Image 1 (tube, rainbow, N blue to C red):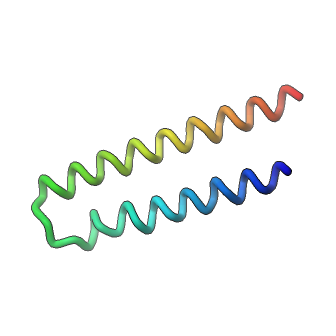
Image 2 (cartoon, rainbow, N blue to C red; image 1 turned 180 degrees about the vertical axis):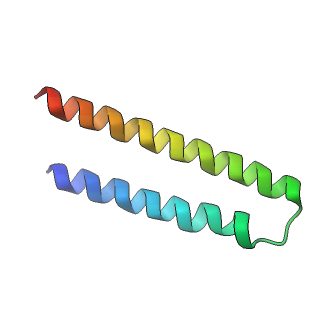
Length: 62
């Protein structure tokens, strides 16, 4: 069961990297649009990392 959660987090990180950083690096929008997108992608990474840490801590308590 534990490995399923890790696979889900891996897929989420790959998805955020591909669909989040791709537009930041390759889009032809203004610098302001790119920075807003980068900030949102950064927040998504932070949320995913916090959720993963909480899952690992909860899993180790058992």
